[in-house]
Length: 227
Image 1 (tube, rainbow, N blue to C red):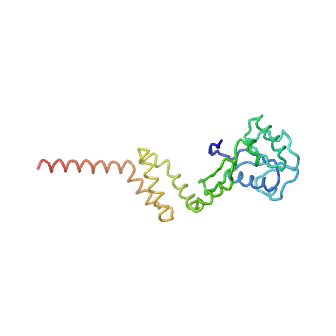
Image 2 (cartoon, rainbow, N blue to C red):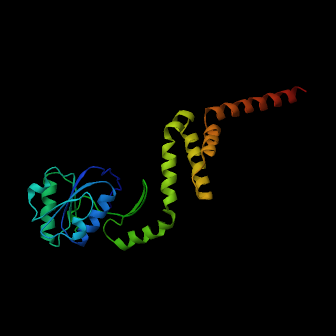
Image 3 (cartoon, helix red, strand yellow):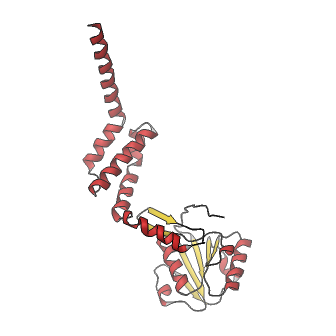
């Protein structure tokens, strides 16, 4: 059974990692990149985890009460039975849980992903073949440049103006496609003037001009026929 690719907002959400080794470190780096409030619990915790900015930690054995208030849990110990126990406790409390390398104990899995600004591309094999997901990730990496993140941010900043200026969904789509094509072709963010021109062409003013031009063309054609 494949996993549904749902993107969720982790900004400020409380996430617990049980485990303090290299696997836990990788999971912590991923969760922190998306703004989670992270806590790590394990009898021994790597120095890199302890020094990670904004991460709370406790060097102790996991206890059920550690789950209180958590929105998401990762079981990353080196003991499969312990990971299974943690997953069971989470499911009883309806807390989404990932047990590393134990698909049957996972409510969600970590995809291979690339991130530039707010643009995220994620790949998954449903936990069956991580090398396949990594292959897809490396194939798309050349396209995921910092410029793409900047372009996305630029287009996002125009949303309110575009909604106010362009009447139809199809017109808005054409506008965004035009600006994206320009940015990718010239490898730069469109200038303020270019954006204003595009808004004018696709917006209400541009539509009115096109309608006047169409009407005049029809009137001229009718006049030619009378002659």
